[in-house]
Length: 189
Image 1 (cartoon, rainbow, N blue to C red):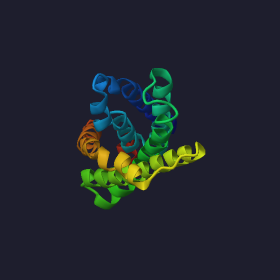
Image 2 (spheres, rainbow, N blue to C red):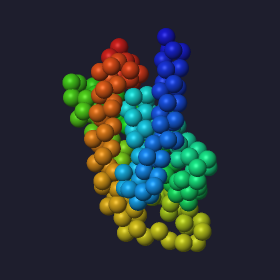
Image 3 (cartoon, one colour):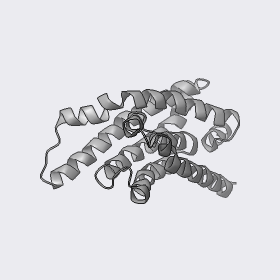
């Protein structure tokens, strides 16, 4: 049974990888709109919440790098590498916190999801900012805190709100349909 569970998580992650590769094309003609809503982040949050921390972290790291290398967006390494570390933390933190918070909040899965996502957003944005600061430092440039805050927090409010609305709705639907591997293991534990 464990082998089937791993295969199922691999399948879900592969589907979310494909969705992540295609989803940004919906906003492709309007680059500023795409940057505003960050469609690439949605599959990573869903993966972390449904498949767990290891699958979510792997998808989060691979997706922006693969997409950047194949399609040139996000530009790699300047944008793609910091985004890879940011999204790695999205998948890692949501996948690690959500099962723990489900036990605390029992029937309030939405509350557990929201707390896990907000924590992931904060930690992921910090990881992306640190990566960008290191990359700029290696080039002899500085990365001001005001630029970091504007890029990762102020400029991403709309996308964060969209993610906080869309991702839990999708995950709740998957759980209700009994298609979420993480919900299956939590229910049997």
